[in-house]
Amino acid sequence: MKLFRIKNKLNLLLLMLVCCSMVACVQRDVNLKAKALSDTIIVGKSVKVRLTLEGIDSDIFKGRDTKSSDGFFGDYHQNHDFRTFVREVPKELGKNVLGPYTIKMMDREFVSNKVIVEVIEQPEESFEIKMPKEGRVGEEITIKLSGSLNGSLTAKLKENEIFKVNARSIRTSVVNGVHNTVWEFSVKLKKKGVFEMNRSTFVNLPDQIKIKPVRFEVK
Image 1 (cartoon, rainbow, N blue to C red):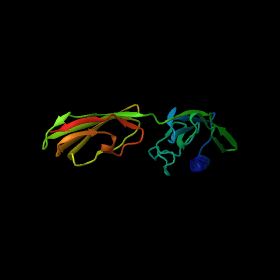
Image 2: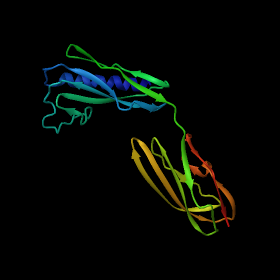
Image 3: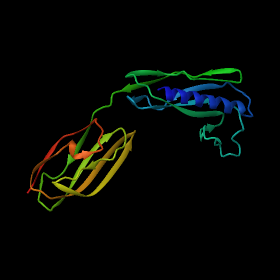
Image 4: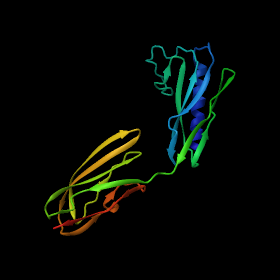
């Protein structure tokens, strides 16, 4: 948390220095506004806060394709507004108040509004295994693992004495930050018996992912 605060202060100091070096004059009210890019985050995750300094009159970006030479403002200069981002890692569960953020320049102090971000526990996420209930030694079958989660991951199927993995593919669609993913594994059966596919059959799965076991028979 201290590291993020230090970075935030450095960013704001750089913003102040850049603005003070502009060939600019304030012809209207200048306001500093803060907005969290997400109202809810999972505990331990960071949230981006956009800071917009509205009302600065400057020609510093003319002839530069409206991009900052040092990358600090990036592409976030439009009309009389300058925007940048800071990151915060609120760790208290429930509602967290961030800010206000302050910039002092041109003998003035600009204070932003506060923003509220709710921190929630990592929700449990259920994944489903789809596969034939039986097969024969030497046969190739398809095993599918599907589910939704707030982020991407790369699931793998462990090779063992029951089957050999021949191929793997993945399909993902993202809607409102939720990754809907289907992994398909083509495996060749190589041992007779009744077996169970469960969470331990896969690797690279986060702790919150739960999988309902599936039993199958190889004849």
